Image 1: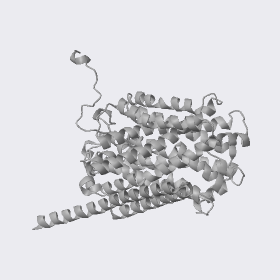
Image 2: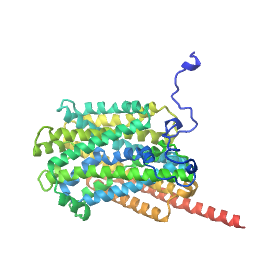
Image 3: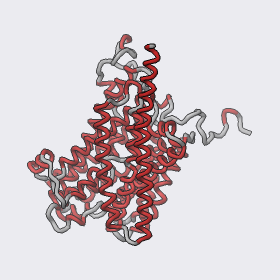
Image 4: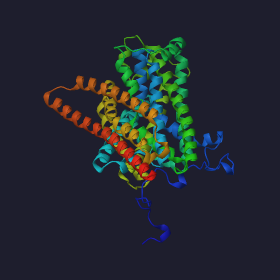
Length: 510
């Protein structure tokens, strides 16, 4: 028997219900730069110090806009479409910002994240399906991120470390994440800031070395252009911006600040600062993606090798074209890619904890949840690395399949988000209004339609044989049925609550 003060730590948390952050882990912002009379009454005055304290969750969220999958889509867009899709990159980032702000709004106003709310608001069978879809999306994103890191490690080691060795090294970021968590949320956010800065400096360096055309860059941002030859790249640019696991993640990250959702002034204040820092974070991500796209537009647009460039060989092609110098461009590219891969895999581990804990209400210790979620991605990634080690082109084919996997999951993050953000009994006065609701649904439908085009074009080229065609048909029918169910539930639930509210008001008047 162990004495009371030396008992083994249980694997299960002691709290009755899973929460994103314990109270002791949250950053305190109340009372900073405000008079006593300002406390909890209306909206406190703007404070630069408070903005600094609220800064962090948006930058962690923005890393999903900079993961290796996005980098590959952007470099291929630049190589094949030149500067012509920069306007689409800008508007896709703006659409992503809208979705992420809704996610933050949901988390702050309810005090719960999206996975927790899905567990409470949907029946068991739908909740389990949504959880499986979210896990599949996370695994697909994680494989791309780990492979991206492994490619960078292979480059930096001059080929001494194969892909599978890079995967093993990357797997240990789980333990780095756990180590950093022990020092508090702000220390963890500082590490991610360093990784984002590393990406920015690396790709800015390459931008300076290649010297893209400033006039073409500006015209590409301001003048929309789209042709049949660049439609595939356009779909990829938009499709990679909305990451299903990132929608779940952001609604949880915003709860790292101690904000009482029952106090409207505090919620408005938090939403104001989160909106500012999320906008700034995605502006930085847009600039980094702009660097990548324009570098490859300058270097390879119109060349014979443009269509063959992928994440695996991109650095070598840059090296062949622009040479070495004091700091060889191949290694600068690899450093930026490694920062992108490492930061996104750690945030993927973070998202996995929230998704599993929220949907299943598993009160596991954080280290155990992180280990489980890391294993979900590392095991299939190791298989992929061993299978595709000898073929660079096969890695690019794999990325196409993984993009399809994530595209399939997008409705199962967006529809619940918009449904829950519209519910008055959850959001109170912070539910989205008619204009914002319409705008959000238009963005969601557009993103889902674009990804639907990707799925149709992909399956039409890949499906061969009667049995496979039948399987795909059955899958699509079941898939669409579930999407229709989620939309119908959203509409019917909103109508029912509107009826209840009207009836309550009438009864009170009588």
